[in-house]
Length: 164
Image (cartoon, rainbow, N blue to C red; front, top):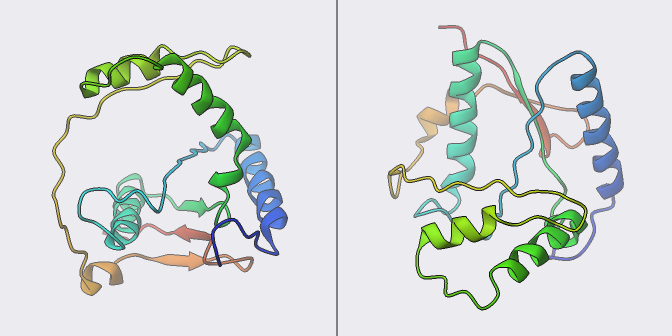
């Protein structure tokens, strides 16, 4: 699918996510929203970044001993995310004219951003060192116990804990 085109099931996926989140919150389960950009490569991961994400989620499911369900927004969604664009316009305005000389300056300027409606941005610099060029082997991926949902299993799936 080309960038900017809408998938035929785009709205159905949003409804699926909304329904799933409401159901989980109703029974007191945690819900986490993560925003990542496929085009923004982290270090040297390239396509292995997605494999690493799944491997690390599997480790978390194993450690916590409960299933972790994942629901992705449809492709191209971020481009049309009104909240994201409204937020980043305030961040851009906040650092206009400021020289972005180091990470601390960038984090400070982002963290000092508040939108017109009062949304306050939280930001922190992660100084941890991460391995560069980490390859996820097929053997490691065999450990990942994914059960795909019936509706768009490529977007919606659950990682089950592996008994230890």
